[in-house]
Length: 70
Image 1 (cartoon, rainbow, N blue to C red):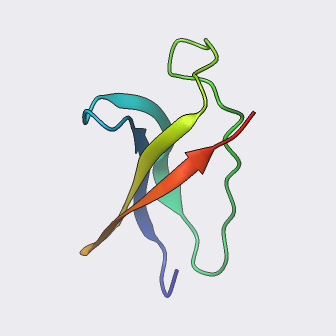
Image 2 (tube, rainbow, N blue to C red):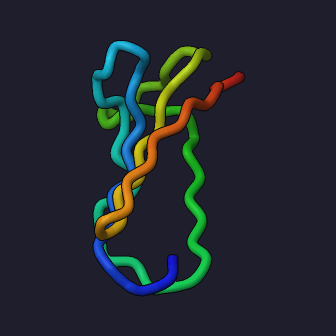
């Protein structure tokens, strides 16, 4: 991140339903890492498949596909 600010990182299934919120906090500038262990917001494991992650940081928003393999 080029500067400190509010960051939200969420994972959605292919139907657009929110699966997990990984980050919803102020983050410092620089490189930040997050690891998803394959669970949902309730703590249950999700199935292998294609998911979409969406990151919002200030005015920046990006969504990309990813594959979860177990």
